[in-house]
Length: 273
Image 1 (cartoon, rainbow, N blue to C red):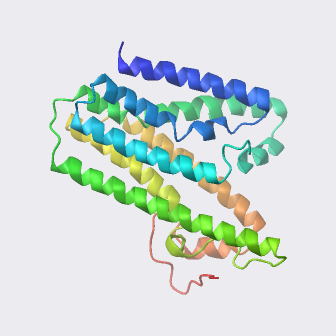
Image 2: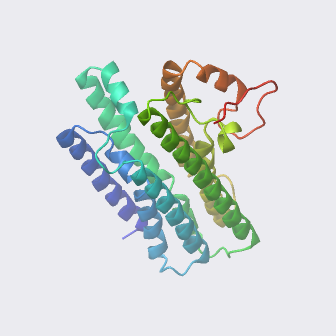
Image 3: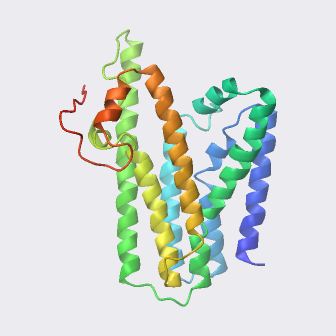
């Protein structure tokens, strides 16, 4: 059986599970809980189909596994597997009628996002199809680049985690935290450095596939483009919520790059603690 067909069968089963689970539990965060897991499974399927004998596929599998392990850990420590629903879905639920939200749940949360999780893993299918292309210096450079992006996201998430721990401690002590959102470290250079590094890692995975095929003109770029579209939509929605909660967030938006890390604008004031 073609490994691509195996991936599609697994993806269909996962999507069906997420939909049924969301109906039974009335919790629409099931796709969030499998987000860091199923792309790893898909890449392993392609590497396994090659008998784990292709160096490029094996490296891609190791890198994606490291991505999944880091993201799963970060999601778990924030309570993602404890039955807590993403706050953004609750906001959307309040803005829609129950039938509208269920259509949104099925079409976007379940079907569309699971499709994207398949598509971002398909550069591994390209590498599988071009297993005769030798692993070379360019592959090594991409490996180093991916690890750099992985480290960047790890640092960004840790900085946010420490800030949130401090913020909750201040609130528990009856004090008003100041600042009320993280603005230091990597967050001084980007309002969403974790989003930047996350997308950068998957663009690197795409480049592995393109390198194997010998051309950047690969249809698998669709998955990375759709992932970027999801993050753009998510960023805009998250920032709208933050701005409604923290009026000072508007100043942060004026002074700090949205996603791509860059120097703060001149005259910008960064709150610190």
